[in-house]
Amino acid sequence: MIKNILWDFDGVILDSMPIRDYGFRKIFDKYPKETVEELIKYHRLNGGLSRFHKIKYFYNTLLNKEISEEQIQNYAEQFTIVMKEQLINKKYLIEDSVDFIKTNYKHYNFHIVSGSEHHELNYLCEKLGLTEYFLSINGSPTPKNDLVKNLLEQEQYKKNETILIGDSANDYEAANINDIDFYGYNNEELKKFTTYIKLFRDIIFS
Image (cartoon, rainbow, N blue to C red):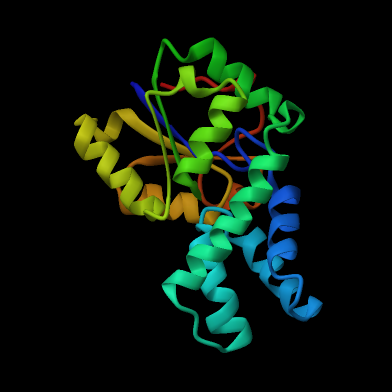
């Protein structure tokens, strides 16, 4: 029986991808547009990875340049400012999943494990009225694999009673590495990997 549900945030609870695209374009607006668009493609394919990883990828792989940890942090802080301005609008909430969360939060142990920056994530959840539905809200720069591992250990959850719901291959990998079941959502490419949720109202966790 499923007792514990770990939730990804972006693309599962909040439809934030277009705003995050805008955020990367904004912080890298002085760089060649075609190179920034390569980052956007990478970002969309790797939704579960943190902005810290993506900023480093932009420099190291796409620009073939070095970047210091201080520079990464500066870009990440600029990105956070944009996100805090844009993503507190409740119109970006995904009604299907949010309705399920509000209806069932007393029946399961809900936690968020996200690639979004930890403090920003908690700020957004508070502003969007979501905080009360989750026992913990966990974000980057800690990698998602470790967020899941740490949570399982801290809460002493049984793996066969715990699942992760996400919308990316990175989420699937985080579940697989930690030996818990994964349910894909809002990305039909995940159907080839795993159990897929089309609508939460039609799903029964057992």
